[in-house]
Picture 1 (tube, rainbow, N blue to C red):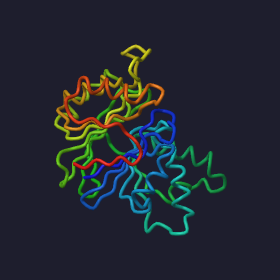
Picture 2 (cartoon, rainbow, N blue to C red):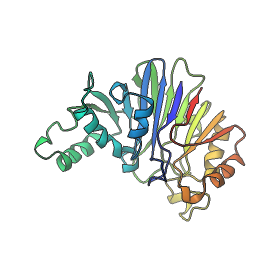
Picture 3 (cartoon, helix red, strand yellow):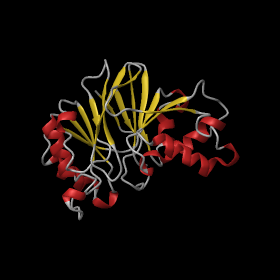
Picture 4 (tube, rainbow, N blue to C red):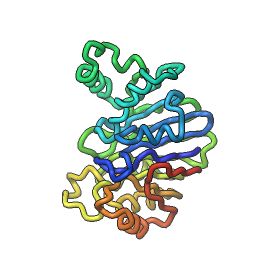
Length: 257
């Protein structure tokens, strides 16, 4: 399997870098996790947006979904039309949000505004989800809105990949992510958060590193970073407690496992 980073910024874009977005390719399947602002142009560098097997959304914050609205226009109006609708797999409540967005953006076209190009469904977080030969599983995180971490297993992968999405430190993700080869972990709180631990919906780089160490991950991809916190400072804080390979998310970074 190959993971390609499409963004990696926190809630707002960094200089030359979009927000949350990851492309997984392998075993003849292409899956995107989240598609935040600034990630669609990067997706076009690495895959044909018409040929994705599915887009899976962790939660409904704009920094994880905004380019889905741009993708709707690309699918609807590009001179080369897609062969079929793109499978869009939303968390619980996602259908209602997109129906509301259709009312806001669609005008007279609001009926079926997104259904013209997307085959929309909501996943059951308690059940496994099959996308081609890949299997996805979910577990809730601790965030400011309902959010789910995602674990991906595929036949050709050298182990599973777990994506924490957005989560605070009080979420016990170790059992869910244990044994993953690749761990994609957010560190949006920065090295010195002001918000109390019990109220936080984001990890520090040190907490991200500890999660990776406790799950036995071989590779930690640190993501959801503010450039103002200092990327190298964040990397050093995570590396101080994690003994495996550490990478910082940046557009175009590709990881194979």
